[in-house]
Length: 97
Image 1 (cartoon, helix red, strand yellow):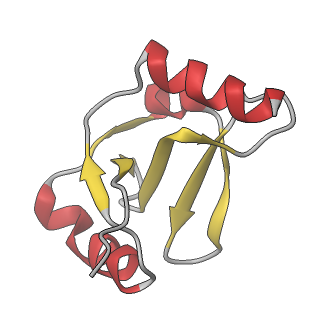
Image 2 (cartoon, rainbow, N blue to C red):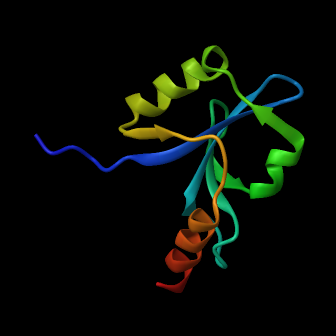
Image 3 (cartoon, rainbow, N blue to C red):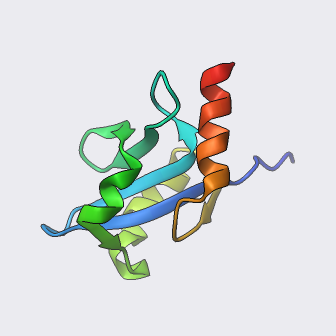
């Protein structure tokens, strides 16, 4: 059985309590700046990495349902806490291709 490579994900919470999953190494824009995101409602979309200024890191109990939903859709996830410069460079390379 082949194991899919792990996809980095950051779970953040808005002030209103909604949880968002951010994929720091997956580009979702023409210039590589925006990253892919996922929420229960709306599902996949684009997110500005600066969204971290308006959210806080989610606790495991807060993102458990969203994590289960993502795993059910086929993601093999690696939970991380922050964006890195390497994530940005990876997104830029996706744009360049």
